[in-house]
Image (cartoon, rainbow, N blue to C red; front, side, top):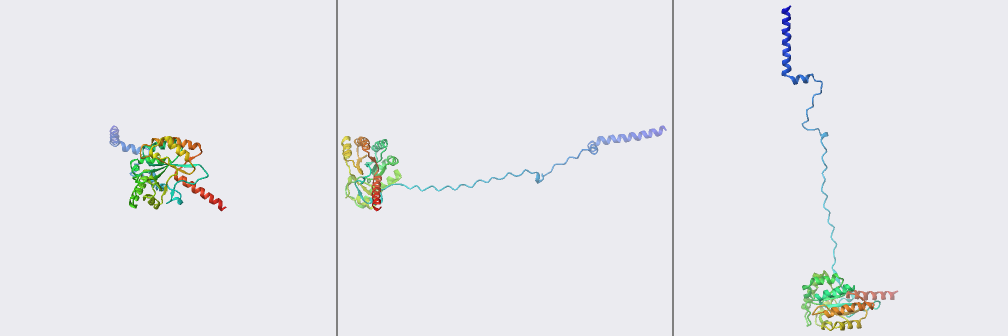
Length: 298
């Protein structure tokens, strides 16, 4: 019996040793085999499509806006009504209001700036007949003339008095017109012949080109530099509605003219006069004539 027990014990000991050896050699596998937990799911190599984040929508750039066409800017034109083009005018016939036109020849010069200040101070306007040579030298002053609401006209390039052929007249007048446009952006169909001479070729060419030849009805002869009081006295004594006054802002020292204008404007305004440009004056005459014609036809 002892021998059987010993044999049995030896077998049991052997089995126990083998079991312990297996546990030591394969602990993870045995633990997994005896575990009741779920096996871990290995990660997907590529996530299924329904789990991917939706792509961000591509924002396409807005098409470039088509630039609006710039409006065509028509140049400013100083021109009389059609019936005065190619004609000679000394004054306007206006009976229904008191208006007068101051005109200045031979600029633009530094004296022009002084006159502009006086006009602006009294809310008045005038017409400036410019020499091409002075326009080339003082384009900014000419620009200020127009910007302030005044009219500008053509007085030839060199201020020649002698007789000229059509080629010379063309050069003198056309080149001055070009510089009027370059300096002010305006075109003008107002012409005044140097010295008021109508028979030396300039006026004929100007009329052929549809200018109105603007003369004057009041001449205080300020070109000879009389005292300011004498200039003012002549203008004030001869003032009538529709009158065109000849003065100068170039051709020499014009301090007497500047002083005279400072006196003329306020005194005529006290008498009820308004100061207008030559084109405005002629437009008023045309409108008055049209109104009278309309009344007769009724």
